Image (cartoon, rainbow over all chains, first blue to last red; front, side):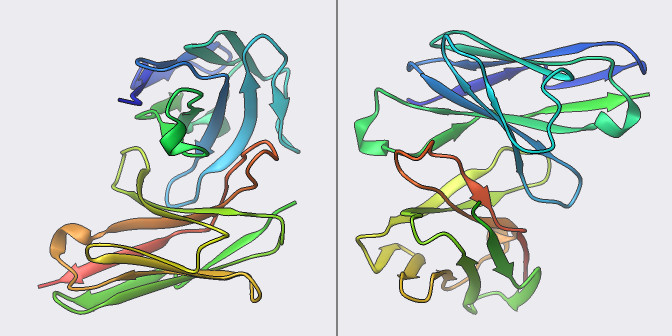
Length: 119
Length: 113
């Protein structure tokens, strides 16, 4: 149980285009999902917290108009990188909190990540 | 906000030896401390976690200790094996406080034959 998927697993795009990344909880409901960015050989940095049915909460320094987050259902959150530039190239990882697995209270279940390369 | 420091950044041990990774945190309200193993290009994998009401937790070759007073926690891996080679991250969060994870900077562990 507690499987999180991400799509696509990798994407290459041209500078100035927008890219949408999907994060799905496959076998549980996730009222809260998180989006992280990880640059090579660095740690995971939280970008935003996504709550179903409400606006995302962005961390300081993260442009909300550039990184659009939508959490329209209890199993799906999307991250759209708008007008992507080479400096946005990174590994984007989502995670989800389960409201179902009470034995894993607090545990975040991570997706496999999406490698974004902006040319 | 929370700040988590992690040491060392790289650690090389011989197979069979023990490895210890240490983290400190700044927010005394943090009460959940997971450890993750991440292989290159993969998702972080939870290997063990500890809550603030417990001082130590063990799972086979892996153990974690927590000192709330000093605000530090450590990961101990015994009888290391080559497959333990990976990057390890500690993290801290506050249950009910948004459950946001603040990650340490990571430790590249290399287990040599």
